[in-house]
Length: 73
View 1 (cartoon, rainbow, N blue to C red):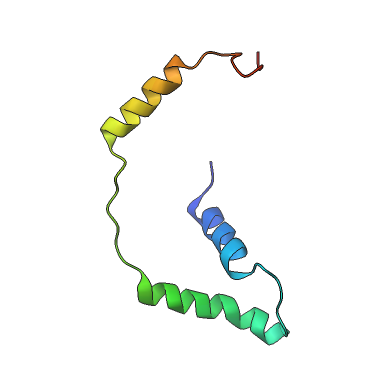
View 2: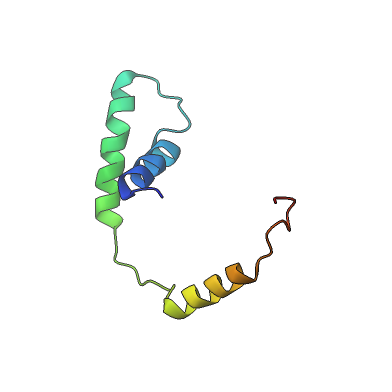
């Protein structure tokens, strides 16, 4: 299971450092810092929509899954 730090680094790599077409090392250095400042400005709390009932429905579907159904024994 991924930790929050691993998820954050994945997001930075994917959204901030890709594509890697930086014209200078200074721009490469500054982009994550600018991205962090932007995120701090636009960040808002969010409401979880996945609740205990949703979890129970999901786990119910998983328990119905047949082993070997996808060719895995």
